[in-house]
Image (cartoon, rainbow over all chains, first blue to last red; front, side, top):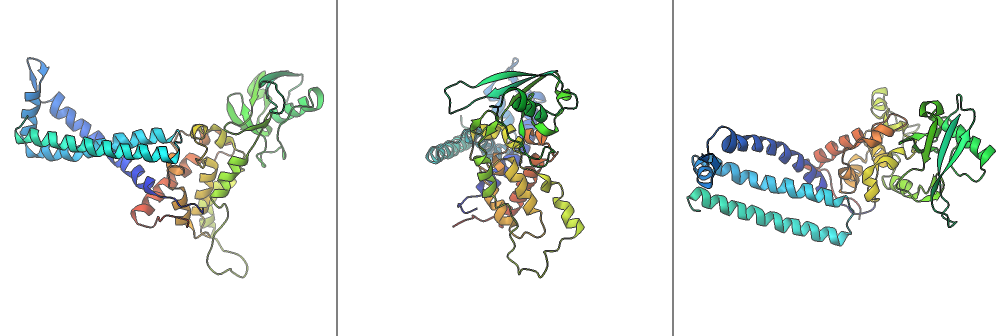
Length: 124
Length: 240
């Protein structure tokens, strides 16, 4: 036990489980709002205006989606990292992949939040 | 009568690895290990395999028999049918035939410090332990280090840095031991991408363990203990 090791895995493992449970709740709510019980179709076709009107109905949905976007991104990228880690990358390659995932994750969250802000603000 | 189809390979020769068939005339009440001894003594003295106690205690004769990792000394030929296919343990270099190089297996085992660590004063007689405290480790101490779990673990197929189910089961054995006071140091060492969190809970190790131990469950318990330790701030980086 002489090597120096980090225990961030304990936290990411725990967060993966927590976000997984929350995503199940998110998915059910999302399906309920957009697909099952609310009509957002125009002549039977799902369209953007319908989605926007439905979301703009309450501030709750703004908070709801902004909270869940980071969860989705974390769960997806961390899960992908776990698969890649099985193939025992060299430490330098692992560091590069992790850095790329961080950049990708932050970018995706930023883009999603900007899009949602515009959407709820009434913009396109 | 049974046909033994045995994996043969000698890295020192230029022969390609192959299966060789041996016919064993009388297999009544015979174990697979006895069958191998029959071949060695009567048919082919060049066959190499490991064994020692012949009663499921030493763990030397673990091998892949008819699709599953088992102890050859505890496997009846009659339970295997007329055809018995034998391969060596996986994920380790083959020294010859059914004998593999167990160095990575024991290297990983050594890494987890498989002995009691107690920084308190040495007692006059012994470290006392109540029957209740002993019961907590009852199940884990039975591991005979046969390597069946190591061979069956698909994570080790791609990642030899993973500590393996045998080592992680022993970690829980010491973490749960009332006489050991290095629980958080042990947890900190295994709570990494190449320790308990590399396990994908596939249950192969649990399925093949000839002692009916539960390495998968042990790793699950270690994960919960590690998360709890991390959230309480007790899990620190280890080493220098």
